[in-house]
Length: 343
Image (cartoon, rainbow, N blue to C red):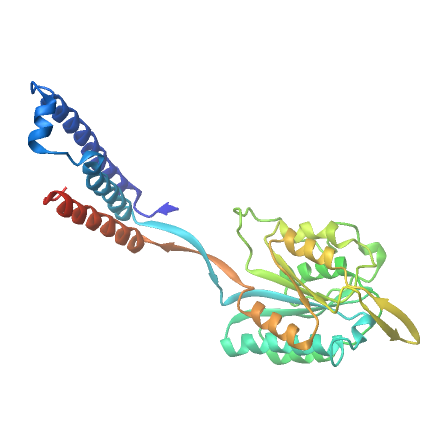
């Protein structure tokens, strides 16, 4: 919590002085009572006293005064609110296993439909969220750099075709390139250009982030298989984590996988949920599993409203002032109820 008017906190001396004065008064009152010759006779004359209950209104009053001074200091706290500007990269698996029809009509068609729904959500909300598309199989390529042109994005997604292997690590690196280099095209197919843990292009130095702080950029990585190309995904995910870029992972299909026939060859596509969960966890994001087109649409529509977050300093003076008023009112009511006087 921060205070927009910290100098006003010097007024905390007022409730402190009142607390000291109250303690001194109570000690003098006790000494005065002991002057009587017979305490038992005094108790018999006036009856049982209020005991410790007499301190409750005074303590509430002092606590209310502290809250009031804090309110005068104009407290503020940092909250995360949905942003209307930012960058989101849709990294979509286009390996041959995306032809499987366990998700109707096929995994690929369902993924395209969900991506279109995500773009439509941004269009309806009129958000200035720049969206890019990265396709990955045995390589990873930026097929559309971050843009506000929703029509061009829809066309780019429609052009996606299933290819061969699954290179999740390269997809992460290429998505980072897209975030930092806008519409620049990139292809990291060549093995000699890929080094474990090092992006193909030079990324800017990681900014100094506070704990829990994120960049106004996110990656949605959708895949139905397990990585079988260098570099390993977990060796490069730190590039995103140190920059505050969250990677939301979406696993398509069932963990047991499905038999897929592509170019005359049959193979079982198995979903590596463990790695996808670790990628999401390492970047303070979330993993989703989709076993139907409905699941995919729901996930993408949910992400459309939560992906881009920004930190905003929000003043909470009204809340602290209301709490102060409530505590002071409670102190007054209890004092009037028990002792027919104000504290």
